[in-house]
Amino acid sequence: MAENSISTRTFLLNYLKIFLLVAAIAAVLLVGFYIIAPTLYAEFEENVGWTTLFTFVAVGFAAQMIDGSLGMAYGISCSSFLMATGVTPVLASASVHVAEVFTTASSGFFHWKLGNFDKKLFRRIAIPGVLGAAAGAFLLSNFDGKLIQPYISAYLILMGFVLIQKSFRPVRIWKFKRPAILAAFGGFMDASGGGGWGPIVSTTLMAGGNHPAKTIGTVNATEFFVAFAAGGVFSVFVGIESIEIVAGLVLGGMLAAPMGALLANKINKRYAMIMVGLLIIFLSGRTVLKSIGLL
Image (tube, rainbow, N blue to C red; front, side, top):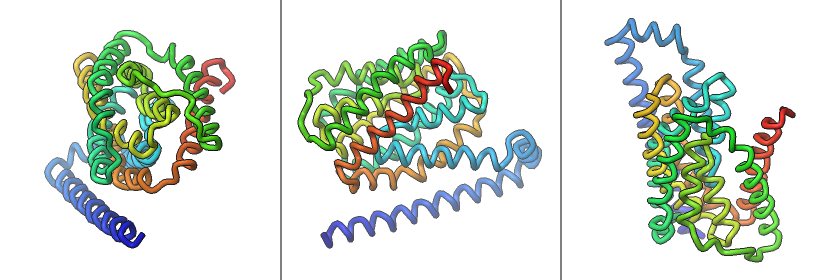
């Protein structure tokens, strides 16, 4: 117990150092921006504003805390917020996936450092996830992938109830024997629907009896490659607009990544499964209700 306490305290001290370093670098860059390019600085304040930028930082921080600790909902949370402000689905998904390249790299590193990583599972889901994400991004660049999202949400609601049931009755319902197919499907839906890698892959694997912390950490680390593939395709076919959105999501996500990884390592298995289940039911239920005009 004492060893774990020292490890956690050391981790938190290192996180505080990282936070202060990032804050100092950001302050230097802002001052330099103001001195070197006063015209661009004035345009930024007029067209974007600090309130908007810090809102995106807060959204990125909150979404990464959820995603890092529970293994899901970064893309869904960010995409939902962006589309609520009038951003189109394809631009929202493009912005989120470019931001995820940075946030998932940070999150995956800290999960690996804390031991939340399964090499065998990583090897089985990485390449299929990348291929699925590239295909999904290409589809959304030419079609509206939101049309099939309600059907995926119905599946996720079912998975949410399965997780809650398993938290009270820890009996294995099934063991998913083809994680490669699951990863390809999850990557495809993540890129085409604006989110879904964590909910689809983590939820199904955990419902099949996989260890929550290691599943969350491995799926989080693999998401770097999934986001990189999707972001690359979006950059080629769509381009990246509204750089302030990406910057805010990246900064907030990278600051939250260490704490999310720590929570995943410390959180009670039973409570984690209940939290994941309730989160998925809420987010997916909201999507279904919106699709039938009740929200």
